[in-house]
Amino acid sequence: MTCPSVCAKLAAYQDGDLRADQARAVEAHLLTCASCARELRELRGVVTLLEGLDELEPSAGFTAGVLKIVAQEPVAEPTQPLLRTGLTLAGVGLALSALILAGLAGWGPLDLSAWQPALASLLTATAKLAATACAAAEPVLGALLEGLARPVGWLLVADVVLLAAVLAGARRFLTGRGWRNLTNVWAL
Amino acid sequence: MQFDDDDRRVQQTLAGDLTAYGALVDRYRKRILNLTYRMLGDRERAEDAAQEAFIRAYRGLRSYRPTGRFASWLFATASNVCIDRLRQRPFAQLSLDEPTGRPDPVDEGVEADPPAAYGRGETQEQVRRALGRLPDSQRLAIALVHLQGLSYEDAAEAMGVPVGTVKSHAHRARHALKRLLSPYMQECTP
Image 1: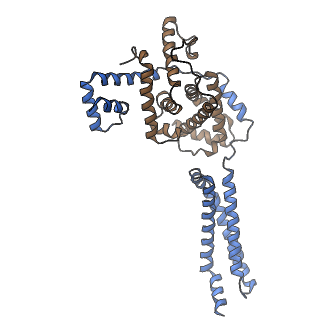
Image 2 (image 1 turned 30 degrees about the vertical axis):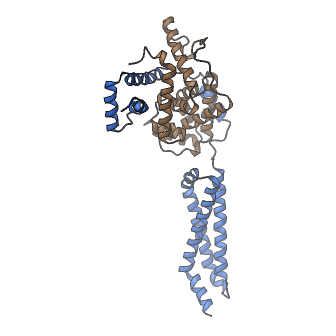
Image 3 (image 1 turned 135 degrees about the horizontal axis):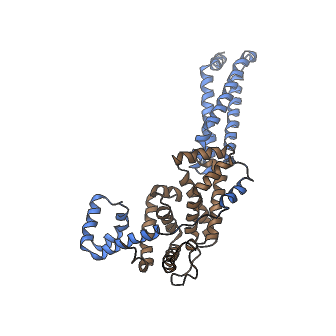
């Protein structure tokens, strides 16, 4: 190895980051090159100087000063008000989905009185599911949204929740009496 | 384990227990203060920045996920405060050739041997000045890894960059410091 290539690797060698074969090559060079060996000694000397720096002690009123300010603030308020907005939007989406389902269920010359219990049951179940899902998903959604550009994140979350609600509602509708009633209507 | 205890105190703080947050401040204030001091180069600014770091951390405490890495999260907050402060006003810098004028505040009244205190204080002041001549990102890497003892992984988390980038900053910084401090390394070179 040449001196420039060894010098370029000395800091990594010092940190133990070189592959075994690279480390062996550097060590072999250091045995024969006083200049590079001195370079390594000086790099180690830098670390020694840094580690020898004295440390400051915080002033006596440091902690009290911090607590005095934070005590005047609401206790660590949620820092993601947009998350609430996103969940609200998702809730609106779910409500719209329920309305669409209700409209589908009520479509056609059906006897509405026969539909009321099923529709009420469907809407109640959907609302419960939405509330549970939103509560359970908040930490996960929060973590997800931290990693996303926020506007994109909110749109994605609102869309995913809305889609899930629509699919869940549609599945229930298709597997329940609603679908059978509609097919009966179409068969008329 | 301290990390678990940190998370427990975070939860207590979120539940409204300010004493728990006081315990977290007490635990990390010295390390955070020394990070801000090495980054800003001035004791008064450093203390102000360190307090702001804890205040910011409190305000954003709900965004911390209890993963046992509160220290890294806190160092990240403090690093951001330092970067913000450095945008407003750079490191308090003097030339390496200028006489120091006064001893480093950390040495005041702690040495029994005045000549030794002067020599040691002078060396420390030169190191402080040399750190101030580094680019902010290199100084931050050095401060986190070599002065605060964070692993490269934790430093990368605190800086919000890949591990390789932190290593690169630290390696360049050590080479630069070697050039700047070579006259002061005679006595400490192994």
